[in-house]
Every structure is written in C-alpha cells, then in structure tokens.
Amino acid sequence: MTKIKKIIPNIFTLLNLFCGCISIIFLQSKNFYGSAIATLFSIIFDFLDGFVSRLIKNENQFGKELDSLADMVSFGIVPSIIVFLFIENNEKKIPFIEWFSFLISIFSACRLAKFNMNPYDYRGLTTPVNTLFFSSLSIMTTYSTVPIFIKNIIMYPVIMLFLIFLSCYFLVCKIPMISFSFEGYSWKKNKERYILLLISTFLLLTLHVVALPCIIIFYITISIYFYRLKNS
Image 1 (cartoon, rainbow, N blue to C red):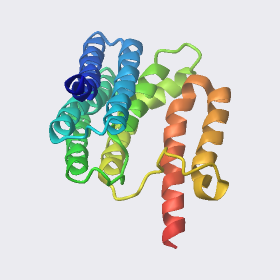
Image 2: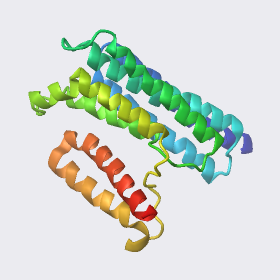
Image 3: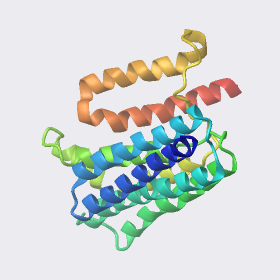
C-alpha cells in the first residue's frame, strides 16, 4: 500500500504530460478549442500531483524532476506553438518573427529550473498561468461572439511580439505574485485575494470567454501593486 501511495503523485504528473502531448496534437490541426481543453486538464493534474504529494508527505527529488519535465511540455512548448500559429497565419507578419514565439519555451525552462532550485520561491508568473493566458486568447479567436476587431488585435504580429516579451519577463521576474492559499478568513490577511476573487467573478459574469485573459492581466497588475505597496 505504501508503494502505491508513493506512485500516485507521479501518475498525476504523467497524466499532465499526456494531456500536454494531446494539446500539441490538437494544435497541429489548429484546433484551439481542443488544445485549450487538454491544457485545462494538464493544469488540473499539475495541481493534483502537488496536492497529493503534500497530503501523503511524499515530496521527493524524482517527483520534482518529473514534474518539471511534464510542465516543460504542457506549459512551455504549448504556449509557444499557439503564438507561432497566430503569427504564422497572419498576412502582415514580419519575416521570421514567428520564431520569437519559442522564447516563451526558453524562459519557461529557466523558470522551472529556478523553481527546482528553490521550491519556496514564488516570485514571477507560474508557467500554468502563463499558458492559460495564451490558451484563453486562442479560444477567443474561435468564438463567433467575440468581435472581429478584437480577434484581429490579438493575432496582430506586433501585439503578439509585445506579449511574448512581457511573458518572458514575468516568468523570471522577482515580483512575488499573489498566492491562492488563504490565511484563515480575515479581510486583513487576505485582502488582495478577496479583491482578486471578487473582480474575477464580476469579469466572468460580464465578459464570459473574454474574461480569462483579463483576469490574468488583473492578477499580474494587482500583484505588482501590492508588492510596491509593501515595499513603500
């Protein structure tokens, strides 16, 4: 029974990797919706492997390395391919600009390596949240309810290049992002979390599919605000 318990977190990690591979297969046929669903499952399995490991107190070096390798596929390569496809299919692209999309993979690898060296360093944007941002943008391009001008803005090469550089910066920056773990229920200790939760709920109810990238942008903004507030 003890041996079975030890491999449960690794099973979730491998399921994360499997879903990341499925996401890439969907992207090959430009099925952004299918890729987004697979990415969502990757995020769920990534959360479960860490949660179960802490629950059964089975955090080990093998599991840590395996988790990073799985994350590199699901949350390092996937967003780069999404951005590559956005730019490649645009008639207004600058020659070879689409190859800049793989900077996201490079900086994701650096982020994961830094986290392996110090698992308690929560500075910078996590790779799953970064991937969720680009994945949500890809879904927006498939929905008929999203205005055409918004889709054109999203897929405009210069905008994508700007988002690539921002993504790379936030992946390795030293800004502490708001933790999703509540410290009790008091407003004083969880002020930023409650604000994030309330605004996110409002955006989901009003903007629907457009809400996800807006929530992530707000998450980064509010993290920077509280970081500077504490420093001042």
